Amino acid sequence: MLIGFGYDRHPLVSGRKLILAGVEVESPFGSLGHSDGDALCHAVIDALLGAAGLGDIGEWFPETEEYKDANSLELLRKTVEVLEKRGYRVINVDVTLLLSGVRLSPYREAILGNLKRVLKTDKVNVKFKSGNSLGFEGEGKGISCYAVCLLQEASG
Ligand code: MG
Image 1 (cartoon, rainbow, N blue to C red):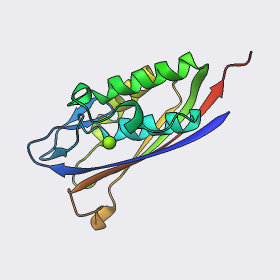
Image 2 (cartoon, protein in one colour):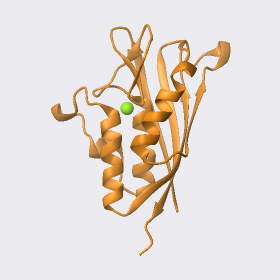
Image 3 (cartoon, protein in one colour):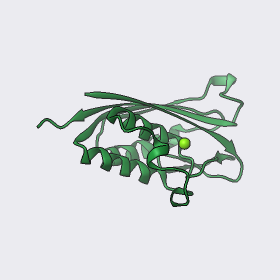
Image 4 (tube, rainbow, N blue to C red):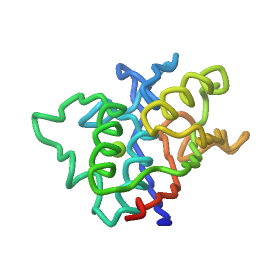
């Protein structure tokens, strides 16, 4: 068993979509990034790569033309494929997302559904933290995400 930890952070700006695990969330602002800015997928990708000892998301999916506006759920799918080729499978993933000013609970099932399908495990959990009235990093200005995962190495 191998544990991995991932973190990601993006600024929130108007005129961009807010996409979380491939789900478009209704919001007055969206995530700024080279790809689609899906901080949730990026944190999970880094957790998976970390567990497998394979570096980080920037090495696998650099900010080149190829990954401009990339669909990050697709990048997560590719990451799982990379792990599978090396004999790993995902046991579970647990995510904590920090975001103020947007109600995310209506999107929970869609987010979980996408993650479970791509990660090929039902053991996926996502937690939404609003920061209560304190907010996070300036109300509505930033999104942060933490993820941990457990991988199993295929036994010979
Ligand atoms: Mg990112």
